[in-house]
Image (cartoon, rainbow, N blue to C red; front, side, top):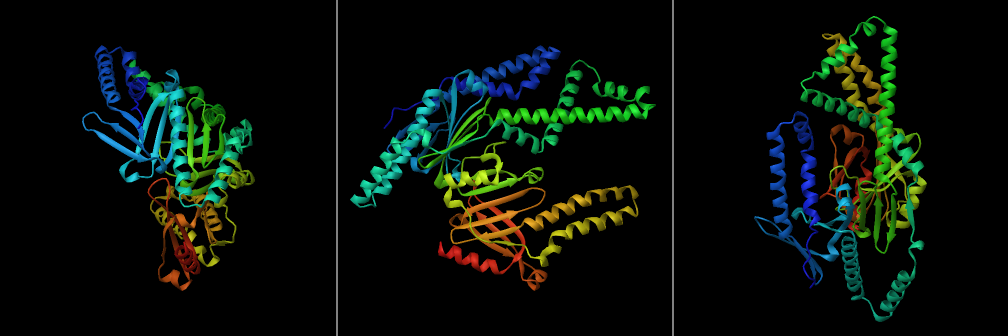
Length: 493
C-alpha cells in the first residue's frame, strides 16, 4: 500500500480563482461604479469559498493499494472511490494559465463506470503529476502483461519477455509520431466556420460595451443610432453603401484574425504518438493538454468534413473513447486536419484493426424522394402562406440551400461492412465517415412503412459504444437485404 497523497495546496488557489473568473464581470462593473457594498460582498464570498476549498483539500486523499486506485473525498458526506487500474480508460494531464502560475498540473482519471460517474481529478506539482501518471500507466501495463502471461506456456512467455525488452531498448525516436504544422493550422482556421464564431464574438463585444456605458449611465444604443442616422448617411446612398462594405470587410477580417489566433493557441505543437498500448496526444499553448488513451478502449473512428473543407478534400479525424471529449467545448480529436492519405497513415500506424476494406452500399435511386420530401413540403407551405402574407415568399430563397443539403445527404449516405469492421457515411452540408469494429456494435434495428416495404427499403439504426453510454447512427432508405447480413455478422461475433 502506498502512503496516502493529497492534492497540492495550490489547488485551493486554483479553485478559488475559478470562482473569481465566474464572477469577474460583476466585479468589473462594481469597480467601475465603485459600489462598496458589491465589492465587499464579492470579497467576502471569495474568502468563504476559499475556506470551503481548504476544508475540501484536507478531506481528499488518494493512493494505490494492491491493484486499485483509492480516492477519498467529501466535506459533509464522505465518498470513497475504488478503480481497478486495468479499468482506467483515460489519463488526462492538463494545465491552464492559473495552473501555470503555481507550476501545477491537473490529472483527470476516467474509468468506464459512467453510471457511477467514476472520475477523479487530482492537482499536483508538475513533477509529481507526471510521476503519478507514469506510475498508473506502468501499473496498468504490468497488470495486463501478468493477466496475459497467466494463460501462456513457458516458451511463449520467453518470447514475450524478449519482445518487451526490445521495446524498452528502442529509443523514442523510433516511435511513430505526427505533428501539425503552422501551415496546416492556418488552413484549418481559414476553412472552418470562422465567420459565424467571429461574428458572435464581435457582437458580444458590443454587448459588453453597452454594459460598460450603462455603468456610467450612458446610452450606447442611442449614440450608435444617432451616428448612423446622421444627415451624411441618410442623404448620400453611396456613402451608406461604402460604409456597409467597409464594415463587412472589417467584420470579416476581425473574424479571420480571431479564428486564426484561437486555432494557433489551441493546437500549438499538436503531437500524436503511440507508446506501448496507448495513444498519446499533446497540444496547447495557454492551456496545455496531454492525453493517454488505451488503444483497446477506442470504440470508433470518425472522419469529419465541413462544407468548405469538401472543396479542399480535408478532414478532421476524431475517436470515440470514454473520458475524452466529454468535457464542455472539448473535442475528441486524434488529428485536427489533413488530407485523407495522411489521416489514413495515422490509422495504419496506430489503429490498423480499424481500417476498412470493402464495398460501400449507397442509397438506391428509388429512395430519392425520401431525401427531398421535406423540401417540397417547405416550398408548398411558403407558397400557400404567401397568398395571405406576400413578403413571406422571400423565404423561398432558402430552398436552394435545403435542396443542396438534401442532395449531398442522399449522395453520401452509405453502409459498408466486412467480417470485422463496419463503415457508415452520413452526408449533408457536412460529411461524416464512421468506422467501428463490429464487436463494438450494441444493436441494430430497422424501421419501415408500407411505402418503404413496397420498394424494399428501410431506415437503419445502429447503436454502438462511444464516449457516452451509447450512440445511434441512422441511415435512411437503404436496401433491406443488408440487415440480414449484418445480423449474421453480429451472431458470429
